[in-house]
Length: 386
Image 1 (tube, helix red, strand yellow):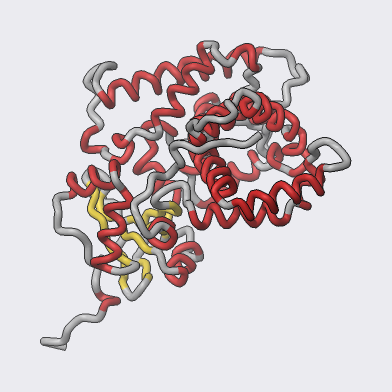
Image 2: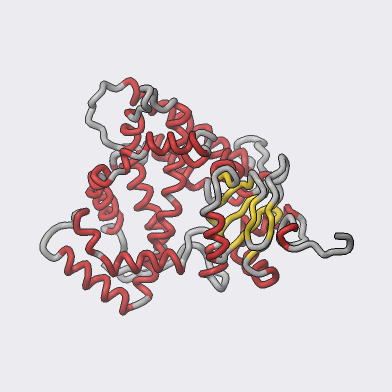
């Protein structure tokens, strides 16, 4: 009807900042909490960011809107394409997190067996040993970086459980490259495609790409050696199990697919797990009553024997502490990224499909709900008790 004001449902995108997309991308990459707090205060629980090279992002944080997003159809919302829009240069395009619909389900079925309970229990002692070795080196009576130590733990576990790298080989070529690649994912350039210019190995993005290429060479060489090894050589790391995985037609992962899965597990499990672990320890050590209850429960559950996976479910209070820490101290500013492939209604807006040069994505922002002030995403220094 002429002169009628359109309803929110007819609008394409919610409001957002007027600043240049390059400025928004820089702020998001360098000080995300400050940017998200500003947007929440101005626009509420649903707003738009316009990031250079990544297009329009619609960010939401209310439980109702999050439920709408996570229950959306896979035809309308693509998680794989959204992940590729940010991480493709490092992760590749053939891992489980970059695939969609049928291909995604097929890959998940192929990779699931190594993550079944009994198989994971087999890695329990390896994880305990890796953690114990690091904790045993902590100083007593003086502060140190908890986040750094948590990174050491998660990296040692990854090298042992995923790649089968023994402790005496942790400083070998493959291990050094894996460590370098794990550090790459923290670069702000990951979120700034407009600045991703490979001008040689000494330029910012060129250095990242050089590390990526060198790591690929080492991983492909490792794949070649593993494929040439005799069957039944006894290796039970995830690298070996992925090599053995077969689809119904008898085909396994190609070298490229295997490389992408290994790198995905490295980058998805290193920094995220380390940050979660560091915040959990920081919360426990900062709250004496929580520390006392955790220690009391640990003494009760493990008083009559060594650590064992069958006793871990009995740590009910400790489990609650971990979950509450994750709620109160999220490990990243956003999560649950999706690319909109068909008009999608959320929060009174109709989000349009992504265009060729502008990706309309929606994502949940744990930071807006649980972090009221500017904080880093990992505790920098904390004292420890042993």
